[in-house]
Image (cartoon, rainbow, N blue to C red; front, side):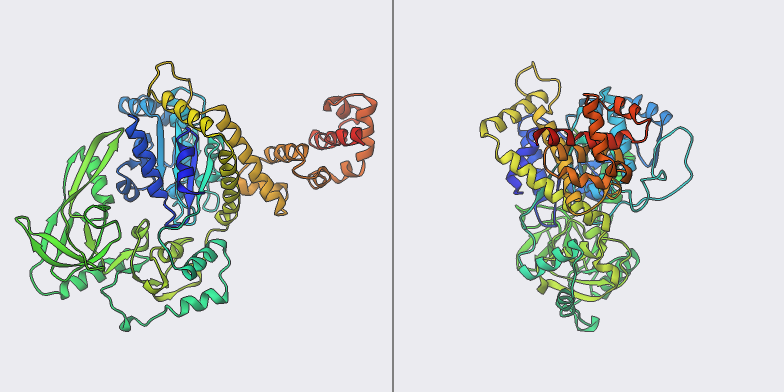
Amino acid sequence: MKQDQALAIMKTGANVFLTGEPGSGKTHTINQYIAYLRQNGVEPSITASTGIAATHIGGMTIHSWSGIGIRRSLSNYDLDKIASTEYLVKRIKRAKILIIDEVSMISAATLEMVEAVCRAIRSQSEPFGGLQVILVGDFFQLPPIVRTRETEAETIFDETEPGFGRADGFAFNSSAWRRGRFLTCYLSEQHRQSDIKYLELLSAIRAGEVTEYHSEILTKRRAAAESLDFDLPKLFTHNVNVDSLNERELAKLAGRPRSFRMSGKGREVLVATLKKSCLSPENLELKIGARVIFTKNNQRAGFINGTLGQVVDFEGFDNLPVVRTFDGRRVVAEPMEWTIDDSGKVLAQVTQVPLRLAWAITVHKSQGMSLDAAVMDLSAVFEYGQGYVALSRVRALEGLFLLGWNERTFQVHPIVAEADVAWRGQSSETGRLFGAMAESDLEKMQENFLRSCGVGKKNKPKTGRSKKIDKLAADNTYAETLAFWNEGKNLKQIAKTRGLKEGTVRTHLEKLAAEGKITKQSLAKIMNPKAVKDLTEILAMFHQLKTKSLTPVFEKFNGAYSYDDLRVVRLFLEDKKES
């Protein structure tokens, strides 16, 4: 799906899961939507899963926004306390649109808690209390950190509950995700990598299909440490390696270091959060010759988050660093602001020169960056997606220099790989359905949503989510089940992969069979063998009793066949009638 179509879909008020490969333009697209809303006088609630991600988009963490804080479970007492906190009630009640960036790092339990808080405070039974929710992220990147602990009394949601373990802790496996009926918009264009061979390699990692051919490509990018230009940024998997290398390289440079202290204003606890999350350090020490990386976007000034360069001078009254970028531009790095914003109101702000030393950075902090070139030591990769995040930072193979890697480097989470197949299918179907819609109808849906947010007419509809959107979302969930069924998965496998009850998947399959999207005969796989064997006899009983009701047939056979099996048999009644 292209960015313009994803943007048009979000404008209708649909709940959307905006995803795509690194460099596909997720951040650009969501920023366009935010700008559109603000142009129409609607201020969205902008949040992210981590402090670092929140500083990138000028919002706050979803934990802070919702009031759940560091909780890993939510009791009835907790929910009552949050729902009686005045500033949280005001914030969540006046919200219209909730954006959550880097959703891959949110656990299923966290999304459940956020959804419960929204419903409780907004006093509405609709998912997320009737808010439009936009989830942004790529689950092939770093996953949520889920720790275990003893459960508490009266727990509503807990990361230690079954289904919230390491393998099943992804947000897309939560019931909140299912209730939200998110339309998947899978961005397909690539704006970071233009190297076809490199794109093939990254796609192979996502698909879990790394072959000898791909290994050979990477082997050619392997180099000995002593032969490399270490002025290039180096990516490590652990902080200790990053800090020691940066300090060591800075000390080698001649001259007195110049220090730039971060300033802050606003609520003390929020300022502290910003300082911890900001990619620029609280005390930035630089010398002429220091290798640096920009930590914020300012395209007018000629840099983005990830632009590399070298300090060549200090100028002006404040001795601001002058950076020569790798493409030869000379940029004065003036202080910039990072804020925590709540519906347009700045709650906290820090100001710092948007630089950090760049002889080395962690893979974690590189997420979201686009690097011209980098040296990577991936020999200590310990997490699914970590190697993929690192490799996808650079724009082309010629900018990649590998010191080493381990077998975990090319592994992506198998649950995510399975889900990705369904997301691509959902996105194609969503694109097809919206593409077939008359432009006037689409514009009408967009206008209605703006009115529901208080723009224009006062007699606004009660909810911004139209019946057409609900139908599209419902169609998507059936399409996902169909995709897994066509892959040969059985009932239990589909239920486990999708995080649904077997009864729900059974209902999907029955509906798909009734619509002719799968053969009714294939449903024998979900029936008891005895019911399959006695199919003709059971059908005869339906005809004998002249009914389509299940109970009379169930009672006539004294419960020998389950209601689930009888429902499948009933699907054959029309076939018999037609013949």
